[in-house]
Length: 375
Image (tube, rainbow, N blue to C red; front, side, top):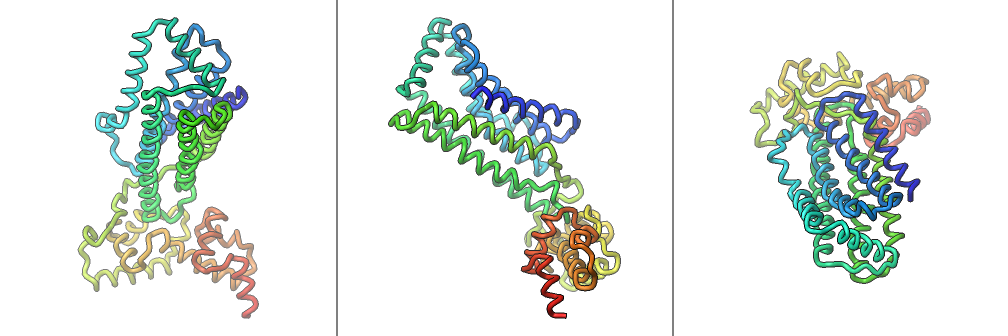
């Protein structure tokens, strides 16, 4: 257990150090650091509870439990900040009410009990854990239920924000390898399975003792460390999308620009001519904003035209041109496939293979073989 916790606070501590060196000013970056600081503190407190005799400092046994009311909120704020939504702390502080109340109750416990009484509470709790005979009070049951509900609710809220972000980058960027956050969606699912489920089992075990609490505690620690490592390894290389030029990716029939059908068709024809003649799709960093500047129209208009004429998004539209160019080279040249991909606007082999498969139904190598057989 000591080695496991040491790994946890070493990984989170080192990641915090690396992120601080980046000197980013984006609020998303700051939330990432705050989340890691929370986990670092948790691992340190858990480690102290194992290694240090808490006879003289029994409050350490109780204080860390309040931290479980922060994880869901911070992960939700992190997800929300991806969409460049305004963060007003006074308004957002409402999400901290359960944590504040819990801390207040803990402080009142310290204020109304002597060190001797706190020691007795600590020894009683510790003895119950060691013998798997700990009985729960109504207050403990309520506290566990609140932790469960809060984590589930904020998991759902955060997942919705991630989905919004994914739609936004598809509407604004032609290359999303560095700014996509599919890993964060997976982390939320892992959070549900590896953190919420053990708490449910822990709650049930209070009523019907069927699981060794030492095993459950070890499983929870492994889950916490695994989530921290997963988050740390991805957040180091994460880049964040900037929607400054094009916050209007949610174009609907109700708010789409007023363009008559003939004008819309003419602009779309001009757009296709531009794509064929100047080949802007070869630029892997092409964005909706950059292409709209070349077309001398507003990003909202360009987004509306693409959506109404292709029933797709900006990402799909640009990558269709890239794939068509790749198909021509696969047919007419013997160049290596990856060189062809990089030469036509792709920056990642895995992304290229996925997009090619989605559009053509074949892998690049299968497509080349089929074409050679036809010839």
